[in-house]
Amino acid sequence: RDIRCKGGFGPWLLDKMGVQLTVTTYKSDADGTVSASTYTNTEGGKGGRSGYTDRRTRTYTRYGKRVTVKSMERNGNKIEDTYVEGTLFERRVNGVLEEGYAVSNE
Image (cartoon, rainbow, N blue to C red):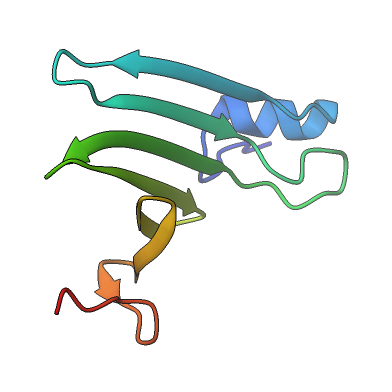
């Protein structure tokens, strides 16, 4: 029987065993940027839809303001939200700027 699947043997095995796995790593760069990356195999469980979610958050200071970029990739789609001082500044879906989210710098 052919057990090849899009995510490889590991995600296939976790799905068949009904296991949901979440792994988070943290990184701090010399420039003060802090990043967190989370990988989750979603919908784990027998008969469930297998997939993954990869989330990354990085925070840095630019022009004296705190900037946080939250990225999520789920089953091939990438969403990136940029916050300045806690307020949503812009949202990009697969690299395309979403209307209604961008804040003018005027």
